[in-house]
Image (cartoon, rainbow, N blue to C red; front, side, top):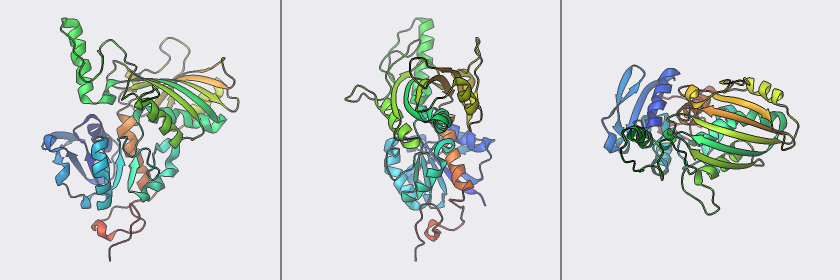
Length: 359
């Protein structure tokens, strides 16, 4: 018997990508339900060779859902994720709402899959920030090899990370440059076309942005709380695909060749590292792909036991939709949840959030 899966935020960039990936990976679902706001109710979305009509989130009965993939923003998740979990579904949330909750596991399956068992506390699993996801996939095998002590990362993040309106704004502004039309920023604080903006999310009192803080907090929670991390997050005029320039300091010696060998064997990583023109990955090549691509691996001569590298990944896939679905697959493969025909009031202790059946 297959699972019943709901996708909340199905008409957004990530929601549509979730539906596409569920179909691509032949996820064991008997039914997939597209849910959105009342404003988007009735909108059509693709699921493999099928077309689904989005239903209103607030009218849906989640007692018939096993897994809920939530991609509707932090405010919606804060209100609805506990309700959906209480109704019986495991919620895998793509927003920032639950990432820093001690009772909610923050999961990247290639990095900390064992932590997924913590979902029983609240019935919710958090998906990390898109820029964090690709970073920790690249860092994990290197940390296992030589123990990372410090990471300095500068991101080059595509506009799709800010949603469809941001993609539309870049497209419109780019056309306006060539037609000599006036450019008025709306989604971004400054012109995005043919520009870079060193500002993602809101500024905090210490001068860092919330996006930069997220990378620090999430890397520590997922990988190792002892690692020192500092980030500078930059928005660039690319539609899909985040890039990162990463400097890493280790406790133990590691050469560039050793790092290259380790990364070639790592899950979710593809190394493209020829020391020649074009011998590296860019966000253009990463778009539509599942892997985190690592290039430009080299020793940093300015610190002891240091490396520098470049990594790129499709932020809509590994940074969001794919990672969420991999978490769902992890739950299934580890037999942490089962699909039941009965209503959630007949839960088994081993199912979902670990509540006992109603008398």
